[in-house]
Length: 304
Ligand code: ATP
Image 1 (cartoon, rainbow, N blue to C red):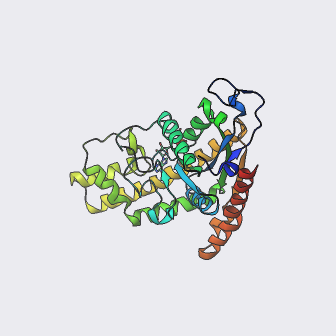
Image 2 (spheres, rainbow, N blue to C red):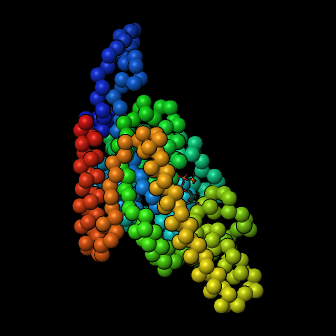
Image 3 (tube, protein in one colour):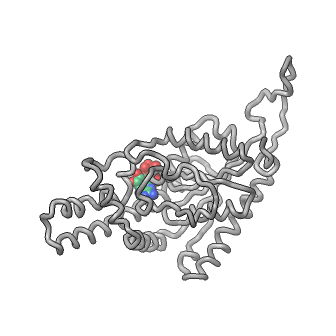
């Protein structure tokens, strides 16, 4: 039973129906069934997708969030991959986060499969599925390379955008905060617990891991003096910042491509001003520029 049907479904009148023995009013055209509704929050790393997804879930009909960040699906490295904390989740259930064996490879096909199961289970609970995360190849695979998806679901795409220079300085400061929160210790624990020194599989590809290799090798060998180690650490932190900025830029390019070439109808929410403010003003600007407009868009989408 899906009690939110009126809110979360697009009603399409069936044109042909069939009444046979033991069958009642079977709609013959799968395109003409009532479509369930799914909200997809996109944006480059650091733009506030997770925050917006939680804001939406708190201000709309009951909702649950499905993570679409390819590194956050793995167990571990919570600081490095910038997972939402329990506190930040504000009681909203999150799926596909911190679940997968960190040494395995979770592919776009795995994402399609598990995200589809999560969507169906959320709908079964009469809730709105909100997909949020930066891995655009996962979202593209789910939406456009999964034949059933467009047939079954009506999508509302929200794109949180922040001007690149502003975003670059924000993600660089975020790396400093991650270091203060224990990024180095987190990677060191993983480095010490394995003999594997390749960075081509699972969570080991996360930005923040390969960059620390030389510093941690130096530490383990004991061959370097303190000054050399400090230099290697600072070089690793700079590289993490640089690679995060490159990631943000690539993700933005990919979103623009999805919009231009795939024709995805995205609602762009420009959060730049919120990133330029400080403290309480940041929250006010976020509410005004991002959270409230997005809530209105989603409410309208659910009514249409
Ligand atoms: P691509 O096709 O380049 O993999 P994508 O859209 O599938 O792009 P992205 O989310 O852009 O996936 O991730 C690309 C790479 O960025 C990942 O392989 C990983 O190295 C890094 N990355 C992504 N998310 C995170 C994260 N949360 N923490 C650390 N590194 C990340």
